Image (cartoon, rainbow, N blue to C red; front, side, top):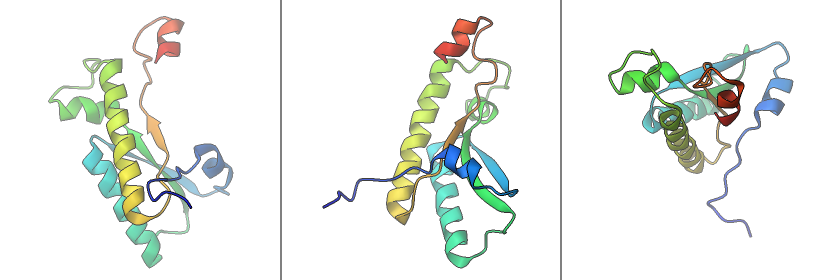
Amino acid sequence: MSTPWRVERRNLTKLVDELGGRLLLAVGVASGAEARQLHHTLHELGERGQVPDYIGGVVVFVSGYLTAASHGLPDLGYVLRSEIARQTDVIEQATWLAALDTGGPALPIGVDIDTGYGGEPSAVLLT
């Protein structure tokens, strides 16, 4: 018997492989509440058959800009690696809870780490 707390997460590699020329949307979120609302909205649109055929999948995107803006900061490197990691954890948990609510798989998560939080290759690896 499986536990009701078990949730699958859509595999990003598999999602990309199945696009077949359709678009993969990366929707930026700044909080767990936004990630959860995104999941519920997409689930509801899917249930109604209102997702356009040209959309092959959606990725919840932890945006560095939105994370900085949620703290009232510009996107100029004020948000540290640890804050992005914390925000990613919050968003991961929110998508997991949303998947529990809807009974579908959790959306994959992408994270904005374009600078690598340092100039050295080791900083990119650490991130």
